[in-house]
Each structure stands twice: as C-alpha cells, then as structure tokens.
Image (cartoon, rainbow, N blue to C red; front, side, top):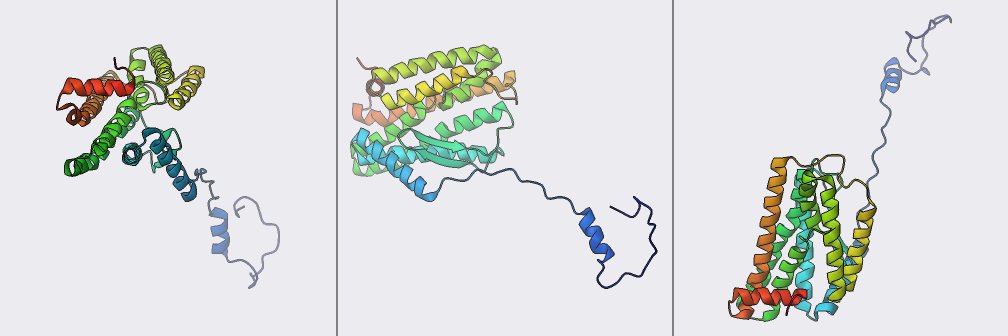
Length: 286
C-alpha cells in the first residue's frame, strides 16, 4: 500500500535505524509475484531407457533369428525417430525426446503442438525419409564382406519406414495423409483411415503378426471413439494439401524403391523378382 492511497493521521517522526529503508520497501511492494511455471514432463530415466532398448533388441533377435538384422532394425528405429525429433526441434516443437517401447517400436514426443497442420505433415514424413539413412552402413558392410545378412538388415530398415507410411492410425502415414483427406471432407479421413486400419489389423492376424495387430486394433478403436479428429489449429489450405500429398507419395516411392533395391542383389538384379520377394515377406506371395 503506497502513501497516496490513505491520509496519514499520526504525528511525523524521524525514521530510526530499525525502520526499513524507503527504497527497499518500494522494491518489495513493486516486485512482481513469481509466476508458476508449466510442469515439465520428466525424461525417460537412463536405467529404463537401457532396459527398454535391451528388451526391444532381444525381441527383434527372437523374431528375426539374426543379431545383425535385429541390430539393423534397432538402429533404424532410432534413426527414424531422430528424423521426427529433428523436425520437431526445427519447427519449434522441441526439445523433442525419443522413447523405445519394448515389443512395439519407438516414439518421438514433442513438448509443444505443431503451429499448423502443415508442420504436422512435415514432422510425420521426416521420420521415414530420414530413417532410410540408416541403410547406408549396412549396404556398405555388405559391399565389403558380401554377407547377405547385412543386406537383409538394410531391407528391414527400408520396410520399417515403408510400413510406417501405411495410412492407418497411429502410423506416420495417417498423420501425413489424414489432413489431406480432411481438406476434401472432414469425415473422409475418419472413413478411409478406419477402413485401412481394419484391413491392416486383419493382415496382421492372418500373417501371424499378432502383437502388431493387437496394437493397431487398440489404436483404431481409440480413434473410433474420437469425435473431431483435427486439432484446433485447423486444416490444410488447398496448396498445402497438394504439397502434402506430393511429399507423401514421393516418400512412399523412395521407401519402396529402397526396399526393392536392397533385395535386387538376391534376385540377380531382377526388379520384378525383388518385388515378389518383398511381397512374400509381407504375406502377399503366391
């Protein structure tokens, strides 16, 4: 309370040494109240990060039967999520963090929402595009040693990024293609992504990929319960929708070409044979 708020009715006296200095009192009165900071979510602990990575690596070794292929997928997973994280940090959503989720995959988590749908599309496509870089050392070792396992490791890295582009929730493809579908009609995204999601779950069940099928089924169910899918920052403009679709198709084509290219040495350089070999791995072979 300042002197201008009331009239002092008491006799004036000379301040003593025990009285507070005027400037100190003024500083206390005018100092702004401390503001509460937004709670910051704790990062993944080192012990749990190492344990989850070890569990994921062991699981991959068990299902592939190859330490080289398991290591390739694990490295590819980190590079894929690093692509998401780099894009998040570049677009003001960071600092992003990377988590390894045992038996399921990885996750790059931002601290802030994207400023626009366009930024969200860029983040979703950055993972598959950047993730292909993990193929380079495995192809290089194969060229030196000639061992097929290193080439299969490169193939699995390409497939990791290619499968992530399937437009089924919660894969990257749904986050890249979904906003484009919403630009056409708000319900189109829900219909298309749910139909594809159910188809992917059925594929997982019929090909023995039960963990992936269960995970996708839970995600599809949670998306089915949602009312409005697009966040408050709105939809893409028509030019942004066109660019998003073009980038999605380009990333899809590059990932598919990388997978076929990794298999071509096994088929004597025959592209059709490499495509058929890849389809056999996916469970679509004759």
